[in-house]
Image 1: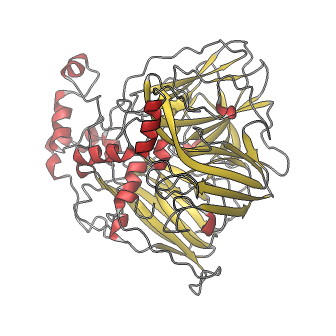
Image 2: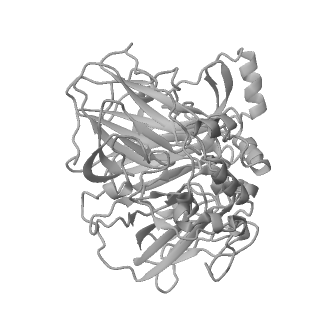
Image 3: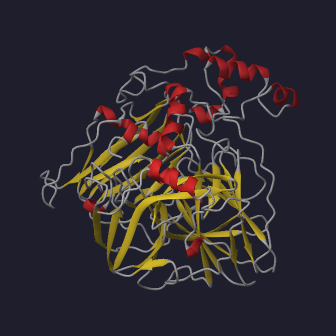
Length: 587
């Protein structure tokens, strides 16, 4: 049995080393990357791959802590596969707690999906689990732990799958950029603080000077929001007051640099592996052409900035013609911090770090209400806007976990995302995305399923339809190959990147026949997103918000896909779920 390194033992070892140990980035993520294609040093490929989960020291600036890593690096090693191959991934757990790896976005047998309590029991300390499956797709994906919030502590890495045929978006060079957030606070401590005081990390509340200068709400609007007990600055649960933002394990001071030659088509595979942070991504002076979303090819669309929600991936092509440094900027949604990386023709060049832009303020639209000016809000009793009338939404389990229901949620797939409403350049929206290949299933949905994203933010309770995972809701049941229109209705004032394991779905944007196919979709505050799902993967699948703290607090369900007769068609399997939302329900 491998040696088990406890956290206490790790810290003692770090103290003996004087705290000077720096966790290395894997070769593909080290500064000054020339880019990579197919295989190379530090890239894991082939049909037999070995991964070891363990503790590692981590240093950022002058601060030291510890990370949960794969093969001793942060991010984890890049796994490069080819469409059509088979792969066996032997994962050994050297931690003193259970662990797991989920292959995010990959289509595989559900027993290989890596979610403890749903698809397998998890990997016990000292044990090895072998994941084995055929590679059925190509594109940019990633992998991460689905156990004990280890994902927030560094257990995440990139997967690139090269197509068996012709690459639809050819390129001369590529770089992989894994975005993440990092805190020296343990994620369980962060969650405890949020439960004690939901606005604990918000250091950007409105001020008297903001009122005087006109940069914040006016006095009347402030009174209205206060009457509703809502805070328009409550953009993100965890902010730059705790998080450092990283590209490939480097902060802005680390200045991760990817090289290029002028005139090249450079592909950037951008993965948001954060625990809690949506990023707005831009390269000032360099337009980006989006060619892939969540691993699947889209019709090329040029933009100047896009928002990448937690767990999404976007591939863009850039063509820098000037031999100068360009800053790639990933700015946190609430503008409490950013990370700068550099694209340059040679090492030593540094892209400039822009100033943080003004933080956004939420509006009535983010509350699922029509514009308050049109509502005649001066005559309204805003204190009564709790909207718990069951005649409004009869399928919600009303209780302490449901603080509000959106009055008039609207489709916001054409809206610029939070914080980008008024920037003077082009911004990507979901309606700009059109799949390159025609949608494979042209059937009309046979039924509709409404799912409400619900919360009591004052008590930090998150749920679907008012029910937390710990309350053991019935699985969301589908018949195999059933075609269903799913409407996600966000009754909260925060965005939620909703991820369905084992499937892609069509985000309904009006591009009939070419709707974007995604595995994760971000539902804007007070808005709704519809997707059409062909439930073609038998088994039990996780369905959850990918904001880690929201998932752990209950915004999680099980989706089950069965034959018409109710059989699974792949042997008996029924794992017992965990009961505590503190451990993510089935997480």
